[in-house]
Image (cartoon, rainbow, N blue to C red):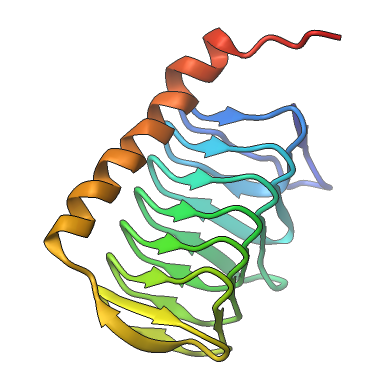
Length: 175
């Protein structure tokens, strides 16, 4: 694992959190329990703070960063899809940020909201809870159904299981 302190900032990883050896966790990064941090992900708390809740899935090639003295806050059971960028914002519980999406400074993504693949949530935008946003810039295009919540709750549990049990026991380097 590439876990680094930076000056007086030291990462604190919650119980059952898995960090892939090709990910980088730097400085003031605090995770809850059972988080998954996939290959190529970069969580850079070098001059800001990153806080992840419990059961957060940070998929491959995600970038999370915060401004000096500020916080990027990610709530419980959030899925950050492959290659998304989350910068100095607040993402509330149960959110899904799609692959390749960008969530910019001071944005707030409400509980159970979905940011579609490739969407750009601009600076200071507030995405209402239980809505789907898409496009550049992101705009509300729908609502999150109970069926969607049920399906994604199962997906989120899979990543927590990968972090706490399956990857630590089953991932074997072959070179």
